[in-house]
Image (tube, rainbow, N blue to C red; front, side, top):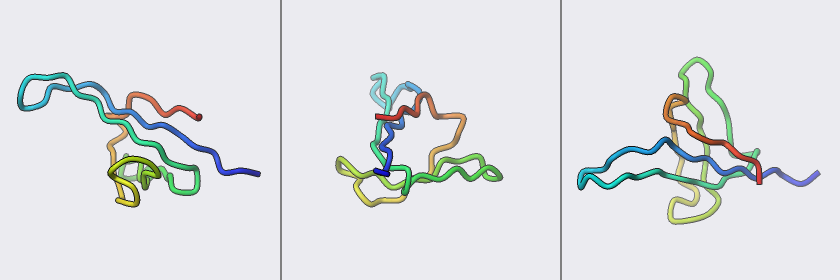
Length: 68
């Protein structure tokens, strides 16, 4: 069975310049885990400039996790 791919998007927020910003990453099911006790999604992006860098995103900041 092929590995599933996901897009993870954060909620919109304003940056230092006042522009509205949202971050987005693509990852696979093998590189995605949910740490229930710490309330974070932990993953390694598979595309873009953050490839291979470990990310911790608080569950409260997650807007969308969508399978592609």
